[in-house]
Image (tube, rainbow, N blue to C red; front, side):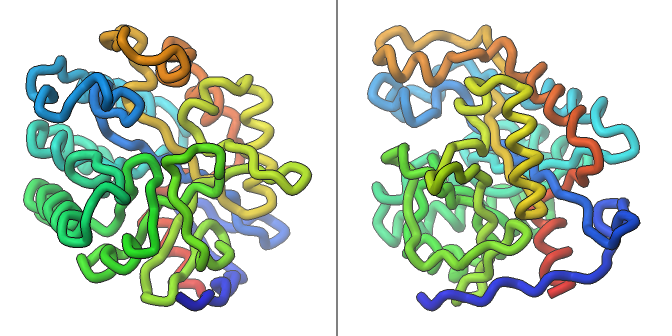
Amino acid sequence: MHRAEPLARADEHQHGGLAQDAVGQEPPVFLLTVDVEDWFQVENFKPWIPFDSWGSRELRVVDNTLRLLDSLETLGGDRPVRATFFILGWVAARCPELVREMDARGHEVASHGYNHRLVPTCSDTELAEDLVSSRHCLEDILGKPVAGYRAPSFSIEPRLIRLLAECGYRYDASYNSFSGNARYGSFDDMPPADRGVALLSNGLYELPVSNLTVAGRTVPWGGGGFFRLIPKHLYAAGVKSEAARDGVFHFYLHPWEIDPGQPRVRQASAMFKFRHYLNLGHCLAKLTYLLDHLDGFVFSTCSEHLSHVTEKA
């Protein structure tokens, strides 16, 4: 795959209801993305929670996602906080009203695959079936097209990019530049992103998760467990610093991360339990703090931001 040229910068626009500031600069954009899966579907617990037991587990994702949706409605003031929800087909098929509720509240619904299988564990046929079935499930519920996809555990591979385009997706949001997690995939031909968007040679767009670069090293800052670990003041400062450089910050979390009352998987290793349960009781308040302190930011869905960038290119 050949590297694509960065998208040209726009001179003027009005995005998400906010125009440019007085010196002609576009306001920074915050992309809030949510990977909608339940506590028993996370990769760290798969050795102790087999897939065939999912149907018997306590389903908590609906209440947790609704709490998150309610919280987002109270934030932002005249800047509505719109987010992109990457939802598992397994969850959507059992909770179609949750999918409709996300859409009705002005958020974007996108695919997180169907059964949370990591990309490397699937054959081409299995992966294509997963991509198509998860998208069709969401489209049947909503009655409109679904544009985006995020691979479970950011397990991107070059063949995923090819199959996503063949299966009718417009963009992918699976690239995480942090190399310290073995499950995160890699993509050597990733062109540099401009305003959080990279155009790939097959016409698919990539919206990578944001991280910081300190002394030439990638520091994980995009969300998840690192968001729960890093002090809120420091985290907010990092978000603003990265957004000042790139014009956008792409953040992610999961509904189970705001649920300290979820069942405990006591058989799991100490490290996996630490990573999963760390600061669950503070996550929603910390998110509220972060969004409250992003003065001047536009809150946009992935598709809205992508359309804005490509229309101005």
